Image 1 (tube, rainbow, N blue to C red):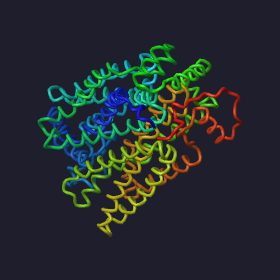
Image 2 (image 1 turned 180 degrees about the horizontal axis):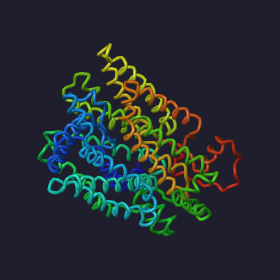
Image 3 (image 1 turned 60 degrees about the vertical axis):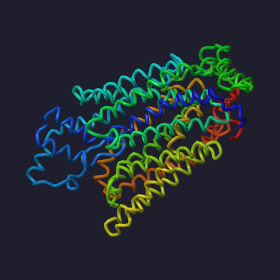
Length: 528
């Protein structure tokens, strides 16, 4: 890697784009800290009767520690006890506040699922920069609704604001990896691709910290906490005006070679751009031969079917690994260990989350995508085993709670080394310009959908399985690890044609007489 590859313009542009990912993470974590305060406010606004409040209390006590997950009441036997008749009356109540809180949390994921289909389309329609500018209108709208929620019908404003913020995050979950992949130098593409995940976990950590009671997570300022995402949105709107458009979008989509060269010179500085232009010219020639591919064609065309199935499996592995369930269960484990302020332990998990995402930035170009994914999944498998053993033996050996605590921190560490960041940018490496927008859209939708399913189902699975619940996740993680070992090719340092040949090799097909497409911008021919 040469020094000239890292220019001031590149650093400025990447920082600006990462503000979107930061907002994504902030929106994921922000609503958790003021949860009980908001629920109390809902009760006050709606004048909820006593028995309804009891249901809400049970629900709030057992809620998750991650915004992206959706809570539901646990087994009532584990909740605060009251007379049997009152308990039955409470459990039979309509659960209005429970429903409103569930919507306040889950509307974010629903908005993300809907919008994830349109990120690639919007980027092709308006260009990458203008698409992110337009998307910020949604971010600002959602932040304003939540920021002013204390002054109006809070439940309506928060639910609406969460849904609109989810729409924004669904769009940028496709736009950010696409843009970063198109502006990054060859040898930095993998490292810069992991910054999307790093910014997300940083946003989560910041929301956890400023959501502490003595900062903004209190009765007076909780609405300010919810609306604070407007600040990075406004900052990004200003900074995007000074960012160059994607050279690949200009050259391949708009066929404006001079503008593409100008954009490349801004990004590369004094470095020679002839190699980039040659690669884009070859890609444009190939893109002219292959029309835009629809989502349906991804599954019906034999050349695209295996790559898209592998891409979807990677995103399913990320979500079905149980990462959100770990966050869900961590608070009760910290409480069992005797920690009087489990919120600080949760912040500790967020800090570990961020630290190991930083580590993956430096490892991804040295160790390779597939290798890191396998290392991460293997480590998570053993962590779920130790987690499960600790929970099962907790009653016999109280010190087992510390085993489970350690397993939580290691699980999060292994997740961020590979399964966390890698699926987001590997999808772009699997596909050429024609099928890439559709592939990114369906992959983002798959990720959001799996997140929603895990969030919705985990409390019920936990009630059914009890302390054995993470043995189930261990089996799932093992299955995805084996799939990765046998079916996922390494993309580091390979052109698109080489990656396509790897897929043909894995499915036992003969090479097809097709012009080579030197997609070196996807993987890099050199090492960092």
